[in-house]
Length: 141
Image (cartoon, rainbow, N blue to C red):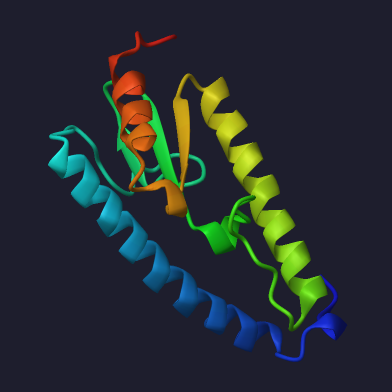
């Protein structure tokens, strides 16, 4: 990335982004945990050492779940590009989406089923149904 498009130094931008990302992601993951518990879905673990660091893994069923924040991952339904530093944000979101595709492909090639859930879809019945179907499906090795 060209530093000329951003008015903050790399260090300042990194510090800002780190603080924003961690707070929002924790809240989103907490909502997802509540949803899984309310549906009595068990057997998940967090922070498993896999490519892309999935938010949740079901090791026995080889299911990796990512709960993607609508802003950071560029949700096609609700992402809005900030007015300031449009070039920076366009490149950043494109980079995140590209990484998501790469990580998903890497996990799938290693025999994992990958589920990506948009933050805005957490409360939809279809979301939990996707998890339940994946957990019941036979493992492909």
